[in-house]
Amino acid sequence: MRADEERIGDEVFAARVALGLRELDGVEHAPDVSDEVSRRLALAEPRAARSPWRWLTAVAALLAIAVTTAVLVQHNRGGGDGGTAEAQGQDPIGPSGAVRLVYELPAEELQRAVARKAGQDAESLIAETVACLQRRVGELAKVTRGEGNTVIVMFDLKRPKEDLGRVEALIGADADLEMRIVASDDYVNGSVRFRLKRERERLNAWLAVPGNKELLYDNPRNIRRFNDDEADGPVAFGKLAWYPHLILPAAGGDRWEPPYSYVQMLASATVKAYDDAEYADGVSEAVRARPQNKRYLIELLAINMDERHFTGKDLDPAGTSVDRAGVLSFRIIDALAGDYADWSEKYLGRCSAIVFNGVVKSAPRFESRIPGRGVIHGLWGEDAAAFAKLLSMPLAVQPELQSRTMVGPR
Image (tube, rainbow, N blue to C red; front, side, top):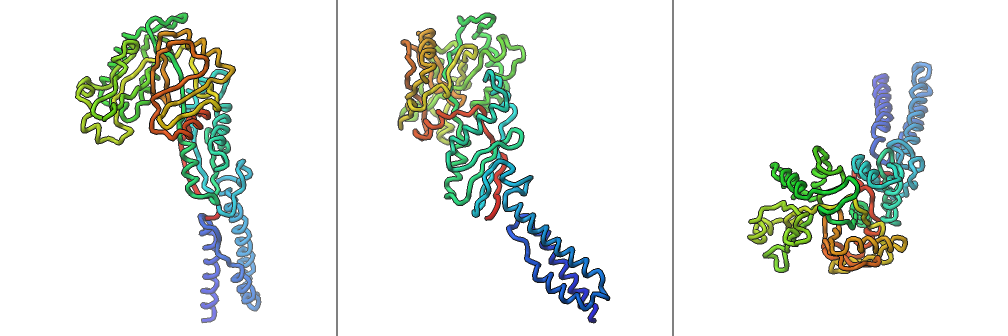
């Protein structure tokens, strides 16, 4: 009977030690078995001669406690997935713990950005993106480079929880501004020239394929699938691209705003992605039932990608603001103000395209030389202060959230 009690006690002791190791993963503290180890050692001394393996069991138990403590310290420092926070270039985790956000810069988008930016490679663009994201979030979080094409954002839980939402919004917000020239048949630059009638026919044939119009209404920027297909293209690949323009309900909400196909200067560079009846009959009940940011018709405008253009990075942050009516006032940086003035003068009487996040917001006609200052209409549904901040910090590649995990104490 005594032997049975000792055997059962031994098994309980071994189970508690094993339990401490098994439960370590995902908890803050492993069960404390040190007192039990000491007690069992004291009980084992009189029976040492009869149980020589007891000392080995005790040593193994003490070793288990040491390993448990070491791994737990590593885990609480944020090193449970491959190293300590310091080794990963992150700030040490505070006593409140942190949220670890992992973002990926999609390889395909990174390659496109490299192709657009002469003199920069993928590594420099990733470093630029990390720096820009840190400026966006400021003191709200710490942004560092991760492995491969990833970016790590550490949010300290000692901050108010609502700040985490602000961090994710600032990182996820896209603010890509382009000022380009609308394509025209008379443009010639070496071997580059456009045949807009033929280009419209190609695009209309693509839109006639079942599912392609629906693809645009899911996300207007999906037109890039057509733009990126260089098969049997009649012009040099990448020299002409179609950008979506959203036709919104006019004041009152019953009728649509005038489309670009009604504007003489733009009609030859425009293709409708809707049926004439959809426009003529006004804003239908089906459209009214959509979410407010989905109430539109889509048309596509041909943009000259060969000619010089200006972007949000060319704006002077001190001279860029957006009012509550959605009107953007901008000023080109001093170093490029003369170039912008020459550019506007070169295309007097022609239309430029103001493109924001891949969508044409307006297509004003140059009436005079513009010395580096101007206004842009058509920006809607954005908070003015945040909008102006994002414009001064455009991202070469938009990051995509891959994971959100808790690190350290809960």
